[in-house]
Image (tube, rainbow, N blue to C red):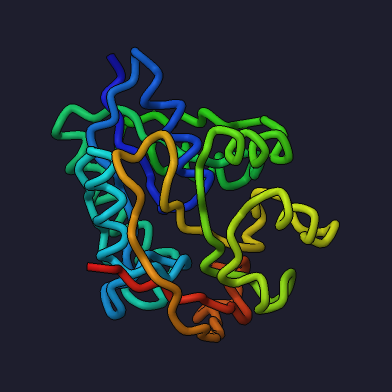
Length: 235
């Protein structure tokens, strides 16, 4: 049995990846691991409120482990925080870390290198698959997700707050990956086969935020402006 921690973002790729992991008999997902902005208490880059993240974990039935990060950490700070968390998980007998990455080779190499430093290995259930086929499968399986963040380099603000369905796929520009694998957009999954019940939320404000790396050699994928659609937890 492969004891694993699952790197959970709350978005569509994570949800589909977890769907496969939960069906895999030789993989045991012990925790969902999510990085959270400790200032705003929101999922890093996705901007989703922590209470919605916690509601997802509760509905899925897997314990959530949050990693609180500074608002705009350098790569060095990020690596140190993550390494400390992974060492703690390794001591608990967890030897594997699961990721929903699909085709970014440099990102996979980076993850595997960092895992090797703490004697852990990576699992990539979606790796190498067609992103067009993956998003279609996501929809056909009954998953429901809403776009919560768009990179203005690729999409305008009207896409923030749209539900991911076939109509949306037809609207995406040709330079945008249908799974947003290049960081074009991020999503929040609120229903699907891995949930015991849907997440009850309402649509909030549209917010614009601009990021600039402290070191221009770092985090270039996250430089620039992003539109966020806030989601509010219904009680």
